[in-house]
Length: 141
Image 1: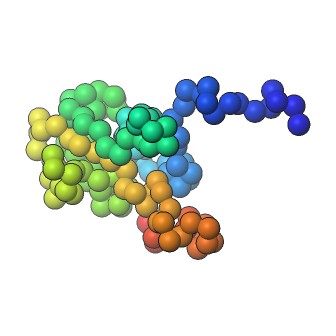
Image 2 (image 1 turned 45 degrees about the vertical axis):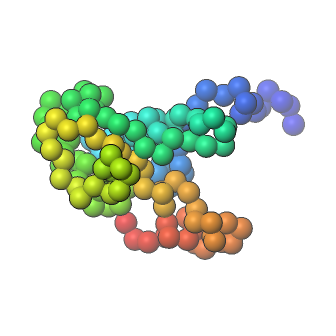
């Protein structure tokens, strides 16, 4: 097979985007899909010192996230984030890393991450076929 049919991963400047999230995007409202893409780029798009590690969470100022998503209203942003939290796609974290109760105060920095079942297979599911997405990720959305 010709080598020009492949890209070298060690030279690629790309963000890994989990397949399960790619399959979910068309079912989300546009605002929700944009938020997911921004959170993925701001987290999984950053490599740790060990090239096998990716950033799990990122901080966002609500006005910056609103601008990146293309929204004029903070209410629309809070509503979209609440939908994503309710579906278990995005988690809002407190400064100490604990899950935030979900209410987003205007002007408060947000620490967001994609929930692990959307990104990783559970350790016990590796190597075993457990449905299309494996392990916990097979739950109904």
